[in-house]
Image (tube, rainbow, N blue to C red; front, side, top):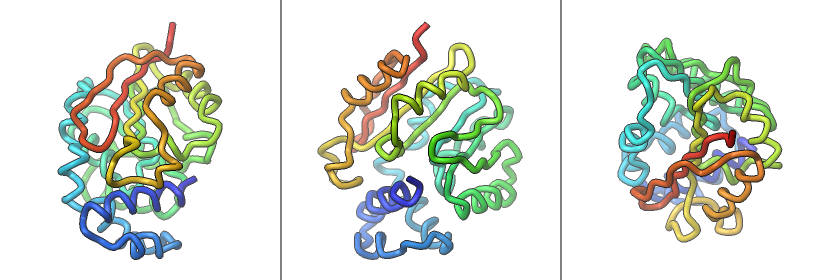
Length: 216
């Protein structure tokens, strides 16, 4: 899942940054972390990803615990850690080189509240319940989603939320269209997994932004 996830994000970001798609997908080894940092953390991504607006909309408490599932190089995780100095951000990925880089980034940027975690394909291995689970451009790579998210309900604190951000069907960037998942499908699958849609934000130009909470 991690390799497909990284390649799909690389396609989206590299295309926006003006890089060649062939170059983005021709790197099948992820030991060249510097290359992937230049792709995932390209400042041009901010124009359509709008990370600070996303985080502001989440309205997190200063001491919130957040799980960034599929964190990659920490594009969102590092921002969340900076904005929640009293909180805790679990940066979760199944790619070992990404987890190693996340640990180095936390030290380099003096983010003691950023904790990298090595996940498995079917379990993020959260050490404790969280207030928010965030998945950005990750949902369409998860296998057996209803089972996966049903199990994650126990890792949310009372009042906790699950946030899914992923590419729209007509986005000019993103994974192949056959891999994309319509927002209504996300809603239906998560409903069967025991969640209810709480809020739907519409300000991202290429992605949908859905907030869910476990049904009581």
